[in-house]
Length: 138
Image (tube, helix red, strand yellow):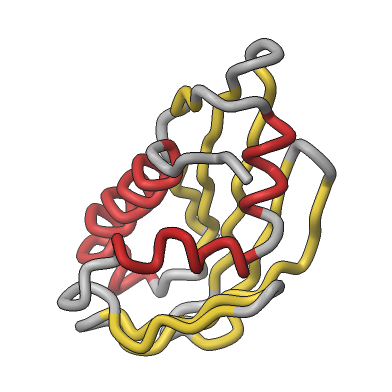
């Protein structure tokens, strides 16, 4: 398994707000209009899973497999060309701010590792940046 980690992102919201939003995927409804149609197609979600068609990768479906209150949400790929896990860690900085990191562990075949490692690392960083810009209010 190859590990990809984002940088740590500061979030100007309490850890409880951030965790509450990332642990219930129905909250994606609030940011659905921010998803570029040309990058992600067939965007669907429910409380525990999210599915999206990402050209040229194809269909990806992630399901939440573990929630650790106010700390971490772990996902597992159910549909993906490459098996992977993703987790979002969130920690308090103080009562009004948090920090977040996104990590992916992927089972990339050796022959593909050189081609996909750069784009995958870039994708992990973009996901973390996007999550850091979400307004975590309810």
